[in-house]
Image 1 (cartoon, rainbow, N blue to C red):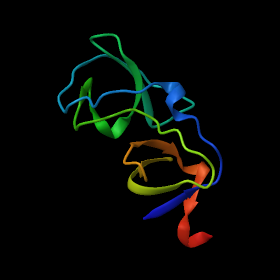
Image 2 (tube, rainbow, N blue to C red):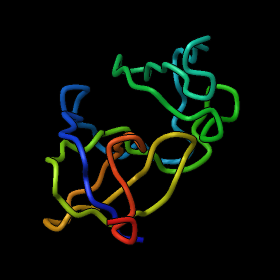
Image 3 (tube, rainbow, N blue to C red):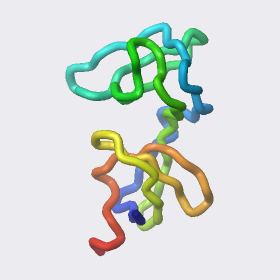
Length: 111
């Protein structure tokens, strides 16, 4: 599905990460009452990021996961890769991939 960004989104302020492979053991996995389905995590090397709870089996990633959020500008077009709760994993026209909040994009078909 093709999407268009309707509001600038500064995703990289949260960090740019490598992909963590399935089976990565995490040092800490927390729960946040305000973000019901996303868990703050810290790797054994001390890298911190948020992970959807469905990507975890206890303190282990159950699939490959890259927590990088994509920075995007209003009017930019994106291709939807997958949806996890209120976030979309997308690819931009330059081939960069990352997460973006669902409330800052809409379907091209809605224009």
